Length: 332
Image (cartoon, rainbow, N blue to C red; front, side, top):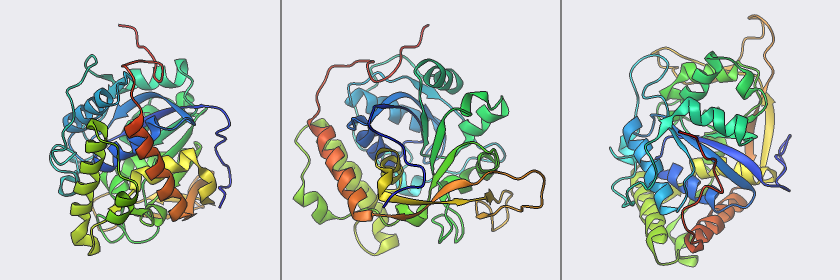
């Protein structure tokens, strides 16, 4: 299965990650740091799955476990309008359901804009992978579109099928629908990987039994994250399984051949009504025409799940000393 405009991974692609870690965000980060197709140049955090303080701490603690000094930027604590919305029923108040991670090894986080600019302008990031609400990107867009015009944005968010926070809305879109609308209507290069495909990529206990993680802190973290995710989803799905929402979006960067994308012109409903966060066709009669986004319609779920497991196993086996070779050094 091939995407309409695939990302070429013949060379190493510099990648910036905007995220709200988050149990499945931590799984996605593990996959990406174990993937030779990409080099992560920076990470920015946004409130979403848990508070900004919690998700930023999780990002920094994860990088300590990964022995990586990729720069971390602290982003938006609340949506563009209204009160923050969290998913602590899935991820816990700390965003990781108590999974043990070591203390941070690097300096305190910078501001998100500083890390964004360094990542995109100095380190040459060509893709921004957004795994949470789009608040940080919308704020960057408000300051001018120049920085984002030369990158592709891949967003895990939205749905054209059943929602997961309301009957019509996916969490990341619901958490900041104004930010989603800003990006969808911006004309920037945007691929959307929504619940239409991410719901199909699932790991079950027998998948983990056939490819156990190596012993050690990384293997323990992954096993605990998947166990917490399976427990959280058991009530909703009627079985213990882990739906790989954010890892699926990571796979869309690494292996777009496993996806089919369709060009659609979409808008996000804002406000506080029951349609908040819903994706709908954009009104073509309102103002200038907006270029379409590329929306993931189909996925080879088995291939994506296998890719995710292979990279998670690889992450457990990699051992290295702390370095910035996969990031970028910020001057004080």
